[in-house]
Each structure stands twice: as structure tokens, then as C-alpha cells.
Image 1 (cartoon, chains in turn orange, yellow):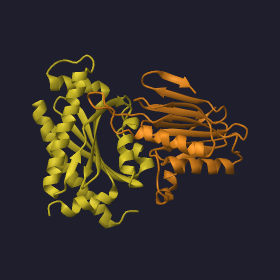
Image 2 (image 1 turned 180 degrees about the horizontal axis):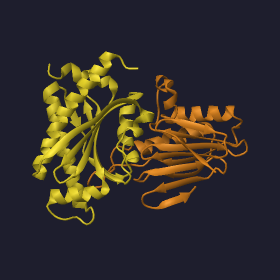
Image 3 (image 1 turned 135 degrees about the horizontal axis):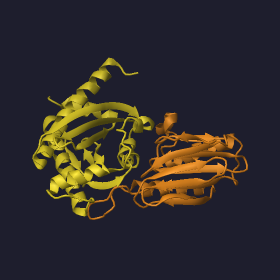
Image 4 (image 1 turned 45 degrees about the vertical axis):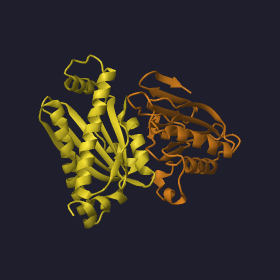
Length: 163
Length: 197
């Protein structure tokens, strides 16, 4: 029997519990999942913005808020729990452009910037992105299974799909 | 834990925001040709991670209009209502039944958002002297959780916390339009220092 762990906006969670499913909802934000299948440890960050400053990370509930700090913080906890660089993989979902002008022009492209920032910071740590579902213009529910590493994405248009 | 002066500030802010939203309710009423009642249901100063639990619990997708404002004050405004209700609202605005929400229907609600934002900002500006520019209105249909994220991210650029004001505008025919204002807690003093001065 699995149990859900909700990851709130700007937060992150790491789990070794093989019954856990990490879940969140993303629009322009991005759900970043890092996992080491060998060490059976996985984490999810709910990233809201591309980059922060050192002062911004003081609140532990916001440790997944910025892309740069989310990667650092997730990685640190996963390594502390037996993960190893070289084995850690990433999956990411979200970064949508939620609002359009009535002529269809995209507005407030924070989603795309979040995705670009995460790609940059993951590359700095040589963490490969093994699957992703990013961009477009709809919100997504994200469920990451700690045991299997499967990520299930649901949205209002296509229903569910596994990544 | 909030000090008593911070609690007082929040109460004063709620009263000020409510009066600015009243002017939006008045514009809404004129467009619909029917009375609109405003109920300011909540003002909270909250951690971002707890914000989604304060929002109205709406099980279906919502139609939302989002407008971002900058200048002397940075704030985000979002109007939304359940997707099924949006057809009723568009029908009222266009004086024509809407089986589905057409492009024209969407456009009419986005325009309503523009007009209501204009009323809100004009009143706020007149009362405080603050100069604020609004973006064009963006609209979308999706879950409320997804749709509030651009607005929250916009405010969260400069703050760890967020102030959210939630008001319900109820028409005589039973349509409820939610009006949400989000701002950085550091901006409260700008409004309060100038309001009524």
C-alpha cells in the first residue's frame, strides 16, 4: 500500500521509504525529481523561480523554491542518504505557460525560464535528465514512485501518462 | 507570531482592499445590469508553501483571468470562477446563451477582468497616490493550483511570504466571481502610509 507525500509550492521532500509516492501540482512551476535507483532514495522539489540569492534560502519550507538552490539542496540530502553522483538521474515536469493573451500570445514566460535554469544546473552536476514533460500551456499533477522511479503525469487534456 | 501592530495593519489593509474591490464590484454590476454583493472572505499573511490551503476549494477546473501590476506597488490580481459557471457569466455579458465557452465568451470575461482591474487600480491610486501600471489580461482554464503559480512566483521573487486577499463577488443570479489580490508583505506599509493621508 503506497502513501502520498505532498510537496508544496517552493518546498522539497526526500524519501527512502519505498511505499512513498511524492506528489505535487505544477503550472508554471517545475517538479524536479532526482533519484538513485541503486540506493533507493528519491526526492522532489517544487521549483518556482530560476535563480535566487543566498538570503532567500533561510526558510526550510522554501528550499525548493529556486532552481539553483533546489538542485543543490536535493542533491545534498540524496548524497547524505546513500546516493552517489554518477548514479543519480533526473526527471522533470511542468514549466507551462499558463496564461495567454486573447490573441494567443503567451504571457509571463516564467515556466520556460524555470526549465532552462534547471537544465543548466543539472548539467553543472552532470546529472542526466532521463525523461521530461515540460512547456505547453496546461497544469499537471505529478506523482513520483520512490520504489520504481516511475513518474505519472496527469493533465486536463490527455489524462495520465507514465514517464 | 504577529504583534498587535502587525494585526492592526492587516485589519486596516483588509478594510482598504475591500473598499477598492467595492469599486470593481460596482463596475461588474453596471456591466451585468444587476446587483453584485462583495464579501471579503479572507486576508492572510502566509508562507508560500501554505498558500494553496487558504484558497477556495473548487473541485472542478476554473476559468481565470490574471493581471500583473507594477510601478510603485507590485501586485498580482486574479479573477476566477468554476469553468461551468464561466459559460453562465459569458452568456450574461454577451446576452446570448453559451453551450460551450466560445472565444468571444472568453474574451468578454477577460475584458471584464480588465475593467474590474481598472476600477480597482484607479481607486487605489486615487486613495494612495501610488502609480501602478497593469499588464494585459491573460486568461486560461485549468486547476486553480496551477493557475495561481505565475502570480505567486511573481510576488515570491522578492519575498518568502505572501499576502493574499480573497473576495467573493456574488451576482443576483447566483454567479460567484472570486477576486484575489496577492502582494509582498513589505508593500503593506506603502499602501497604509498613503491611504487616506
